[in-house]
Length: 126
Image (tube, rainbow, N blue to C red; front, side, top):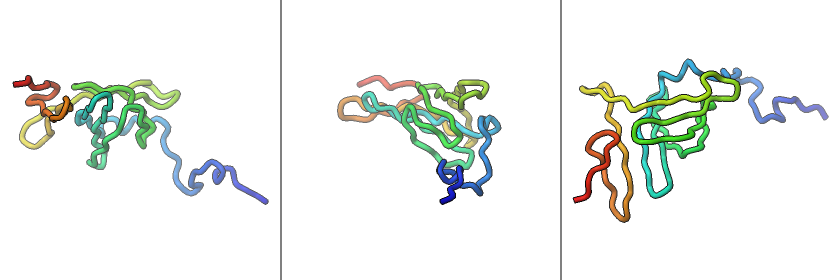
């Protein structure tokens, strides 16, 4: 019985090969903030197609980048093996008049959700 190597690898042999590092797409992605509930963190990313992804730390994006960290103002991604730069950092973008949507953190404390009034700032209790 003959079997082709691509079939064993689980890859479509007729699909075009993907670029390994895909750095041409870096400027097309957008960091939209994060959602945190206890120790669980979800990162909000906008794709070049303008759709939003909600991914966990450690998740692998379709580009091959891995989400390694996030905070109020930035997300850090690890680039593929052998790609330069080896890490990517995206920060929140702020603009006015419908050009960009300001981002913020949402945290869950005990039983109520709180929304920051400014990007990256947690509101005071009161």
